[in-house]
Length: 412
Image (cartoon, rainbow, N blue to C red; front, top):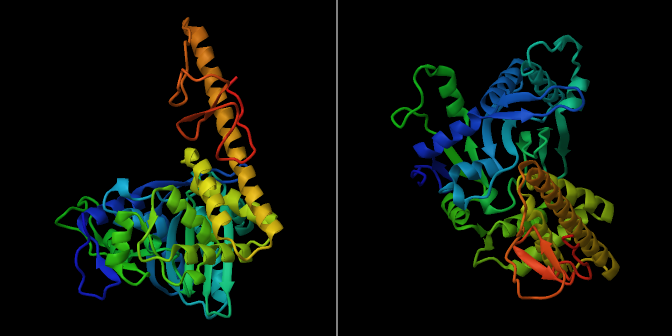
């Protein structure tokens, strides 16, 4: 499956039917927005949310230039086969708006919160729902940026307990819109939204009837970025401009089987990213909060990768950090090591819980467990067995090669 040639410049490409069909499915799927406390979960189709937000903005006089699907979801749509592309987490939507008037930010916030009322289940008393209570119940985070670099944008992230947050970004200007070429894609949704508005509900989309959609790579070269995506290569431009979270994204890509492209200066790139990480998160408390948040948001469905990810991060920070004093560097490495060991203990507890469930099942059914294998075992070796349920390996005498000076817990 490949994108079609576009008459426009090299950063744009027209989507083929298979990609439009995949995009349509993503927009049609219901996404749960979980409420805190007693607030009900909202089952929202991305298509409906975008249309409602757009119409409310227009009603309030906020002009929308275009609407785009951004980041991991866009990469998923454009990838040449599901097996070659990392799974996406957040659903990122970009609304192009004019924010020269700061009053527009308050209008946008009110519009988004009022949209949530439209998706409340039947029987809920909407009259008692204030914008403040809706914000506390359904908004994961809100960000407003207006700085000396000319950046003007706002972000409203709607909560999802599994980390697949719906992020609505309202952008006037932003200096850098991507970290790596593989997450630089933006799919312009306007023609698809128009198709939804004017098409006959009884006439579904088909290979002979579908809208023309264009995708852009803000990396600058669509074909090169698309090749990187499908070859699982890591590349970027001006790595010194990547913010602190870029280090975490880079290690995430490495964990999922991506490799630096041949023309990348890996040592320089890693040093830039480590330096920026420690500038943006300059004490251990901030670093812990950022790491725990990243793990929860990006590995909620890939628990088995958490430990490998932390090992990768440990290695990169250990090898590429040159901007810190020795004790500060050791503090960060100790933090990563502690989190890695914590992940292993949590995984072991889950395995032990499953083992107890199996015992109860056996007792109910009159069965007897002979042996349980958590990975390949050499039955000829002696000593006490230890297991790593993150990787298919078994360790002997409590020594874990991945956590310095930390012993694994025994199976018993």
